[in-house]
Amino acid sequence: LSEFLTKHRAEVIDVCITEYDEQAFVNGIREEGRQEGREEGRALTLYSLVNSGNLKPDIAAKELGISIHEFETAMKKAGMNQPMSK
Image (cartoon, rainbow, N blue to C red; front, side):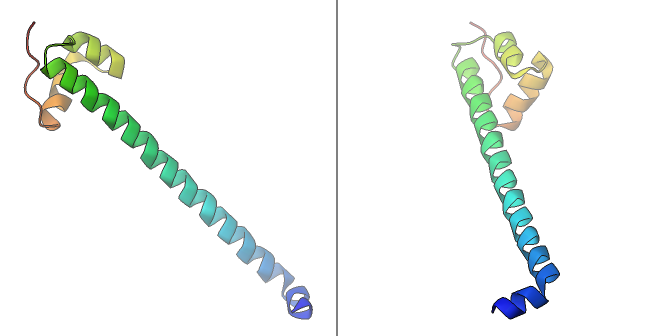
């Protein structure tokens, strides 16, 4: 085995680097997915609070860093009713 690895050293190193990079890529994708899930969950919580009348739409929109119009559009897209007035 040692002789084979020595003879094909460049190829072995290339395979090891490729596998390492692939794992780093997969881990990066997973973390992005988790982050997107957290952001979506946060938005859904704010939509629910607005829908129930416990939070004003302008405050929720500010928390998400979007305009009130974008907030209402996103809320509809998520299947929530229009924000209720309190």
